[in-house]
Amino acid sequence: MKMKIWTYLIFLMPMLFPLQNSLADTEVGGNITEDTTWTQLSSPYVVTSPVQVFLNTTLTIEPGVIIRFNGTIGFKVAGRLIAEGNTDNYIYFTSKSDALDFSMSDAQDKEKCINAYRSLKKIEAALESGINFRDYSKFVNEAKLEINMMNSELKRTRLLLDIYNYYQHAKSLWNYKNKDYNRSISKLLKELSNEYKDSKLLAEIASQEYPNFYEKEARQYLWAKASELLKTYDNL
Image (cartoon, rainbow, N blue to C red; front, side, top):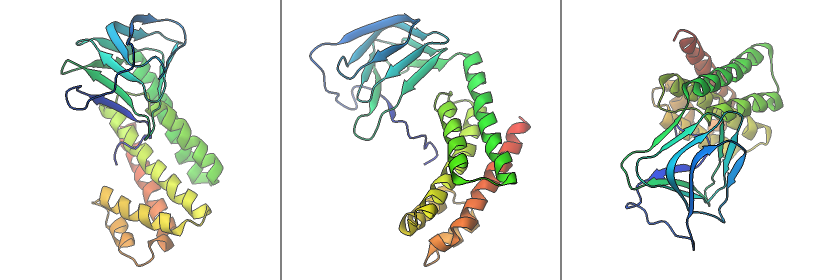
């Protein structure tokens, strides 16, 4: 559950999973200098030369699109990539090669990290002064938009992702509480005790007959862990 960003992107070797072919491939490559959409109707897309999404340009990839790389070909994002699949229509990145050069520019990644960090710090500051669910949810979603676009292999990004996950789990608990979804609260608390196995508090809460009675304690624990990791990030 560490990578709960709710975006379904799958990087596969084509020999592992057979992917359905449409009537014709759409070949793409080169610089993308204006807003562009890769549609499911025109899928699959075959990348025949390096792709670069320029600054201030957005490439949108619709759910269900298949992107096949013809060898080891670069795919660099200096602008914005919107690729949001779902459980019914994944977005597949596949290649005949063992590796994909899929990256963002250093400057762009740094900017995303800064923006995500600011959104996360905004949550922390708001929690200290008191905050309602609507504003909290807004701040968490702001951070999500930035984190979705960052290079997940970088240490600073992984740390921001961990912080975001704490806030996101707390958001889910709070949302269920507001809607009186007690069974959903209990289920999530048990899932969290399995995810964060080093937490004695979450384990103890999950073992109770009615874990939902301890939703607030669990939420406060998640907020405290996020704050702790933010301090670690400050010292990087």
